[in-house]
Length: 112
Image 1 (tube, rainbow, N blue to C red):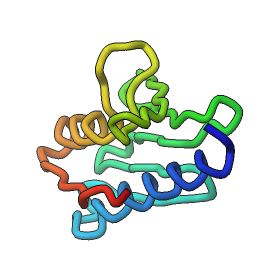
Image 2: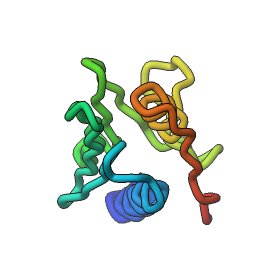
Image 3: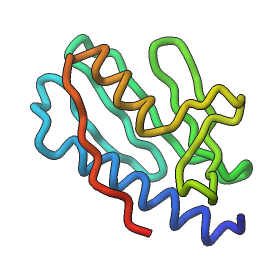
Image 4: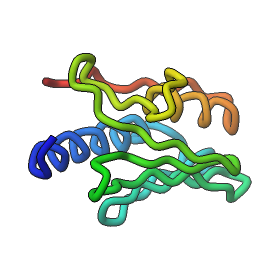
């Protein structure tokens, strides 16, 4: 994937992430963005950090002392882990948030 397409896909992904937190009580989890980084801060002050990795054309996620590297899978139009475990970016964020807050996030349908 060329850089222009990668940046378009990453930008759209970050918008979907942030949109999912618009109606979430910021006392439970607050979503902030700075440049190519989305930071989720939970009530216990722990964080989940999601950021672009332009050189590898990936999105990286770090939370709960663990890290994931997601690559774009054009055939499914999703971001999947590069270790072949079957993890998908939005499902992983949902599980992290559910584990910290009990909330079930809802992501807007992905526009093509």
